[in-house]
Length: 306
Image (tube, rainbow, N blue to C red; front, side, top):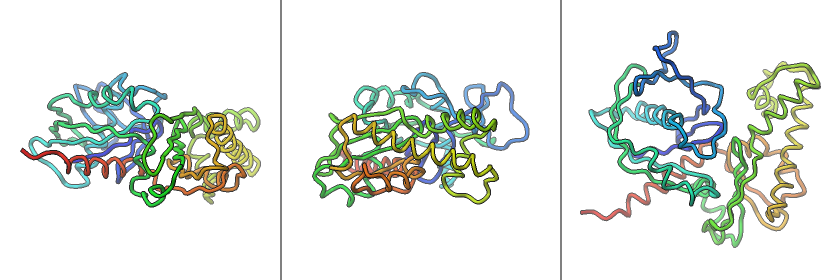
């Protein structure tokens, strides 16, 4: 079974699902919740409190546990269940870290036969192949018409903690030109939460900020707080574009494709900016996971048969 997972700093995505990259560990089975994963003598539940940023996600087992949640969700969705399910895993890394961490990230998932329980149902899987692809490039694979006939185009991935940039030349990734800024949505949210607390004596969270920027009517925050959130987000979008210019990424002279949940959230500000001449947006926050799956299927189809 082929399963693709995008291990974001803010959220874990598969082609069909998304959940916050947050975990709670328990030594005994917690009550009052159904979605419990048991592995290696411990119990785990998903949490809305995301993990701290880790450049190298192989430092401990937490992203492996999050991957087991993703695998179980995908198996549950498809109804796949067998005494031993062989998994081909498609994952990705930021282009800037791809060459350095690719082999280490692939090895992180290869643990022989893996036994765990999800929602009290036992699973036994073996991850027999791991394919690692560059983020950003993978996200535009399903939208190849946007890039294939363009001489130079920048892929801008505004993610949880970083904004990653990849240059495509004639539709091919130039992995010699990979840039990354620590200007993701987590950075923005933390600053907005700090400012609102200091200036308005009010405690808000990520969900408040997202709801305001998406224009949801259910938000009951005062108008001056909403305005503060909106203006801070506008400034953050401008800071991203100015940061890109300092990295020799001038979007007045080159077209861009914006991807990632952060790009969707900040789209109105990017589109209105004089620093962006021509931009397309990939609307699906699951775009990287979808791209990993497409690239993996192509790679698996090219495997020699014995």
